[in-house]
Length: 611
Image (cartoon, rainbow, N blue to C red; front, side, top):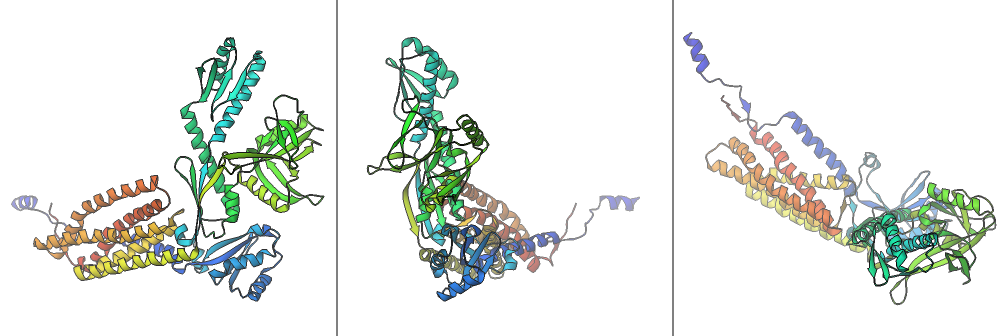
């Protein structure tokens, strides 16, 4: 009994547990992460080759062997040819010969616009087959062109006012109000002159049918204006719609890795990396062309307007179009039976319904196709130019697919089809700024940026090795692993683009990453000075430094997120690398360096745990 009581009151000892020890699965996660990120970063090391993409629609009269022979005859070095059913990719050995090769091959193409300049990864095919690709470079590193567009919202307000004016005329006609006069005011305003007895009915009509319009008395007139909130909503919606249309137009040009984003209230910034001849891109981006189909009417009829044709003769058409360009979902240029250029139009379901209903009731009558575009005159003011390009008699009911003629030369037909296929602008845009950065300047930026990164990294590695000695090499390995992880993430994340400010973020990340190890190693020194063993100093040093490291990185991450959310272009490039660098430095500084120290120093120490 005495022995039992002694055993019950004496402390029990658990089996000794290793100090500074990780489970096997943690090492597996670490190794797998490093291997995947290393493979992801590897294509960037190989770089990219200059290439020319030839779409199957180009109608190139040369086969693969003839392409190689033609380039060789003009002393253009060919690296390889990749061909499939959709396109042929000509990869060149010298980037300086890219433009000359495109001009040469364009002579043998039926549609030269289907030849585009491109850059293709130079990494081995087995690496690319795993889905890895090089880091996408921004405009300042690759070179290219940048446009700043101004979106004019005024025509949108005027269109809203014109629609309300037409509705008011129809309402007055139905109510028998014959002495009503409607005068457009500034932008979104309408001035109504009408008898006092009709004002109450007009107010009720506007309030019930058009509640977003405010009605106020202006002397003997009524003043109608858009509510401020509705003006803001229209502005935001218009800019967003133009953004989407602009992305579609750039995609139709075959330009990859373009950046299209809103800047300020009514401006759009476009960056086209790799584009050195901005003429074609400028024509398509800045164009505001669209089509509309009108019923041809008598000049004396009501609700009509006069639009000149290409000979300057006025054509009387209905004020409201049958179908506008917003209903066009596809447009293809072609050659008609008489050898004239034409554009084959495909409408969406709503546009097809409207066109079918109109043509069914107007067989044998004329329909006009109007071409509309905006431009700025010599005085800088925005003006709209409308022109009737064709007047045709409706021979039968028109479905959602039909064709229009009288569009000019085949090149003009091709350009018009591209604009219609990409979408018509909901508001006119004007290019207010254009910047071109040559590829040589981009290469110089890359060289200088990465030279600064290499210098900073080398000096940091030297300092850590000399100052912390046996722990310094651990910090250096963790720092190199951090760079591998960071480059791997930049290549792996969709939409991530490396810019010159992004390289500045990489240099800053070197300091942030080593700062984590500095905090840990200084805590270890403090614990050693307190008389603890090396193993216990390592254990307590990592534990006590974690909260400080986490707080510092978390607050900096908040700043990076805010910069990325509200910034644009260079600011976002810096914020992206800074934010990713914080994540990778936490991972390598705490997890990876602890794993290395555990393997190198900590496995032969143990501690007793009492309960």
